[in-house]
Amino acid sequence: MEEYFDVLNEKGNFTGKVGSREVCHKEGLWHKAVVVFIINSKEQVLLQKRSPNKRMWPNTWDVTAGGHVLAGEFGFQAIIREAKEELGIELNKNEMTFLGSSISRNLKGGIINNHFNEYYIVNKDLDETKLKLQEEEVSEVNWVDKDVIIEKIRNNYDGITDKEGCWEYLVKYYELTDK
Image (cartoon, rainbow, N blue to C red; front, side):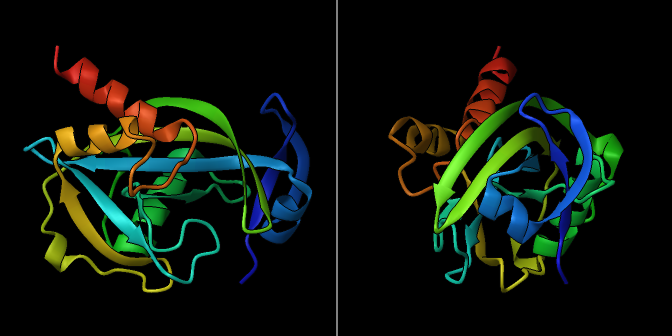
């Protein structure tokens, strides 16, 4: 099923146009994306390993869940949908904390990804062995200690996706919660 996104201008405003995933990525049209980090009571972050079939960052460790915001959808709704689709995790709006937003441009695998990103945190203890992984998206999940993920981020995204902006929000969250 083809996905359609609200097309935004370079300032992030709605243009009133909708574009398919293919057109947005081929033409570099601006659209929204979301990221959620699930953090447990041990301050570990749940990461997913991207499927080897993914065009961007195959076999690479990534955020807990995320993806594109569909046309007519709000960011928090996309997080709820993506967490359910990718990992089988039921989330609700009330357990999400909005961290912030940024823009990013990624050019990989013939895709021009021009995103207005929204970042969220959910504090939740989960048994990763009971998650239902979407095979075409995710090959495995793992809890990662705070110090380990921060080191990977600061070490030029060692072993994780090099998604501009998103990991820095996780670091900032950890810094602010340590005070």
